[in-house]
Image (cartoon, rainbow, N blue to C red; front, side):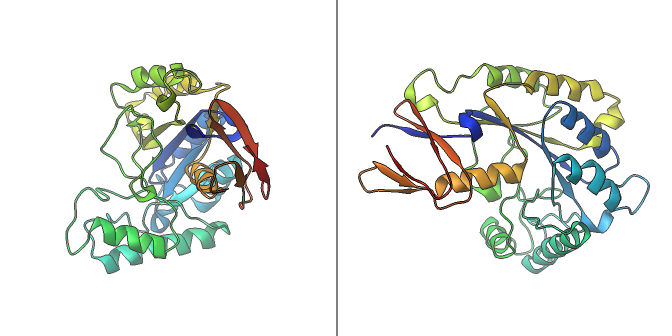
Length: 284
């Protein structure tokens, strides 16, 4: 038995995802751009602010321009309250209200989240990282994105409640990092460097509007799009896929594997590619 690495759908070694906050009208143009380039994104919405003024998306606009285009709607707190600065009760209330209101508005199960404001970078009023992670799990939240740790590691998260993106779209090194990411071949090089890679971009669509630099988004998409070795997915799709991979059941000697999930999974072991269907037992 050699090293084993997850591969994304169709055996792809890399993935790209986007995460954008606050439900501003500019999200319409962002969604249209991502869709045109074959990208997928997660749009983190404050449920109490939907349609509150002319700068915020209405529920109908979210349905038409985000959900119907295959993008994800996720939580961003009902009132944009940073869990780290709130008491645990306040954090629970704001998160639960956001989930209840979004699910009612869109008639769907919503499990993703991005921390609002300073998120989990600062803790006050009896809050702690472990407390926040515990109540998010209890509330059925699958993952939550944090920030302020831009890096070019391109790693999948160690903790789904501390999901660190690759870069904000205005990071001065983003084009350099994109080129580095695109050049990676997960099937070559030293064996321990063949892990699956993820490029995760975050920001606010209104930043493009405010700076009148939508061409910056276009260049990002042009550099990342259309790659045969890359899966373009929402945050929840990545979470669900990796969770399915981690749910595979292995025999003690590593020669058999069972897929108890509903998702087809790909992986590579000792340089050989494998695909295992839902419910299948595979002999390696």
